[in-house]
Length: 228
Ligand SMILES: C[S@@+](CC[C@H](N)C(=O)[O-])C[C@H]1O[C@@H](n2cnc3c(N)ncnc32)[C@H](O)[C@@H]1O
Image 1: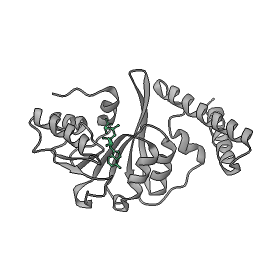
Image 2: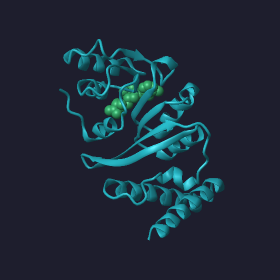
Image 3: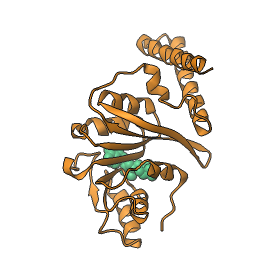
């Protein structure tokens, strides 16, 4: 039986199971293998853009005699996945902007019952904005710590209407007020926003981005004051 890292374990905890799952950017296929071995899903497509990662996945699956339950698929994002093959999609270990691109290139995901499990390594604001504007509702999000690094995981279901939120929400989601690794995550986000804003002000560049980042800070301090 495979043992997952704390990061992938957190991802696995958000999987509903019982449906057709696609793991996009599977690399070694550890996640779908774990989900099969633990009876959370019956089968899954493990896809990746690279032949090398798919070779890693093939090795993992052959060693665990699971190759007939987890077909491999060469695919850039969801390009080679058809709508009938997925009602649960996992994308983890990628930058938020790439996750946004992958989701945006597959408009068919916007349909009742679609469940997404996402773990952006960076720029979670791109992911939240993309989800809200496509009509997904973020259900849960939390952070976990793995070998000294903090990771964010979230899941979302499609609801229908696009929902435009405050810019600050896209940067912090529902993490404000959570304790544990989420506090570190928030500190990291704040530091990034402040550093970027200071640099832009000093360089007198991108006034629109400066205004956006100021709104993000106002949002954060407003939320903090409300919770006191
Ligand atoms: C850092 S690994 C993450 C592996 C695994 N999902 C995890 O979280 O442990 C990123 C994987 O995504 C794949 N990838 C990058 N861009 C992709 C794309 N556009 N479509 C599918 N896979 C992609 C890479 O080839 C690589 O195997």
